[in-house]
Length: 286
Length: 275
Image (spheres, each protein chain N blue to C red):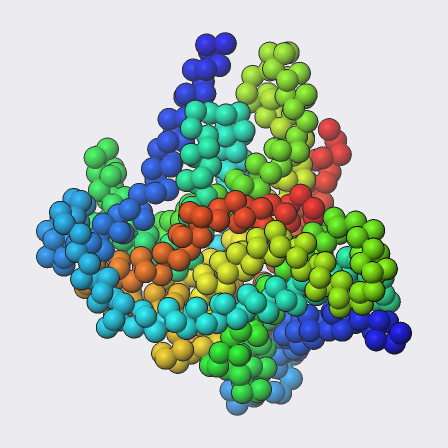
């Protein structure tokens, strides 16, 4: 039965062809591109020229600084859904309603979220109107270089915490409820329960949320940046993905963009491995 | 005991405020879409007195949202069909069939899962241009299939692993070929997973802007989300029409949220508990 022996290969062939041709092969091509020139030097090997130029580019430096900022804000972006999931798991009044409402922004495209928040965060928009009631502001959320990136990250968290929440809740479902009961019997406070029972019990879930949230912040904020700030004001809201787009789509510098792509790939690799190893160690100590 | 009760209510108050902050932006946008331009300028926050559908009609007919909507519908539906077909075929082979190289294939698939689109977008655009696929429906469909296939295969493989090998063996003894097993056993038994992966892929493709922006540059071929980004510049002085366009683009996904929330959650969490 020759056709039977070939069947598994026939079944995987379309997927294999597509993944190799349109994902793995471009990855290699891209790394190769990054060592070639743009424009007049198109195709010529230029060594590390693109990388040198890029690291001296103020907007790319801004993009890297913002990656650092994202890493610093990451614990916040993970703690918010984690805490909310804890309360929902502990059956706060209305927990079913909250769970369902919090998830809703997760289905919206970053473009739609960005467009809506352009209205919310406008100088005379809803947020400043609300803050004025408390005597605060107005703040130029998207026009002040010191504020804009925080505003965009805030919107990103608003848009994605529901997804992480659902993942946390799935983790809670695997938690041994006997441990929680024991903690309650011993009279543990909520922070003690979270620290000694929930966090050690959910190491794998927390690890997963850390990694996916970071990947999300590094690779799915393009729509927000494109609609809300276009990288401005003064280049303060650049991220590597936006830099890649600008160099490829606007500046016609594909080789330079490829160099930025390679750097983004390395950042993702380092962040992912680092987080996994740190969290593994934390999990083992308990 | 009553202290515990109380603390639960204490948590419920900020959570209710957060729920309000989650819903409010969309309610505000919907309200603005219902206002005339004059009403909006006078007072943007007050509830629209009588719903005014003119802006929605304008956005649908003269702004081009209808065209963008059709483009998205075509590209997304075909992409999802191919994703489910290729994903379930490969998932079946990788989970139930023993053949040389299956381990390597699965690992390669996992590796591809961690390549973000931004990392390959420049060479991919060149490959597409070289093969004449840029600015065509097949080009964008191929790009979407390539982008979301690793994830689809990953989920289908882990789902199909839960199907006992005895069922496959029994089907073979009944005279089914491998293809017969796929068509008569795996496809029907995979329905729950296919549904949830299909919805997630619909969401991903429908909401994408970067891939479409890169590979479908001409105005005629714009997908809905790219259309929304172009609204901003065109209607910066007509916010109600702008809000209407945003609302039209959001409605299909809101429908999915309302009716299929469970399936989305299942798909999202499948990766976390099995990984």
